Image 1 (cartoon, rainbow, N blue to C red):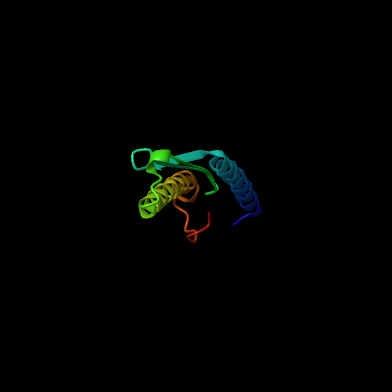
Image 2 (cartoon, helix red, strand yellow; image 1 turned 90 degrees about the vertical axis):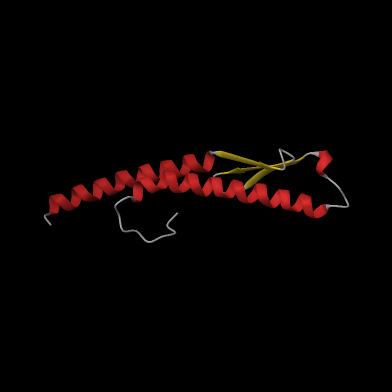
Amino acid sequence: MKGGNMGNMMKQMQKMQKKMMKAQDELHEMTFESSAGGGMVTVVANGKKEITDIQIKEEVVDPDDVEMLQDLILTATNDVIKQIDDKTNETMGQFTKGMNMPGGMF
């Protein structure tokens, strides 16, 4: 490879890296929401997979059925994380198409 081609390739890589970082920053700023039990439990998270809010409707709080409430919280939490993973893969996947990159980079 000639020196000019290598320099050009490096510029392209830097440009792509900046775009990737911008896309990742935008992902981190996004808000994701999932609910379970017909809206009885709602979990909100950001793109960093940090839970930012959990809302529980009063009528679902039953001291005799704590398991149901736990299940609703788990369902909503797991779904919101899956949404984040799906969006991350969709967004960041555009940068890794056609490249042989090791998994788990993001």
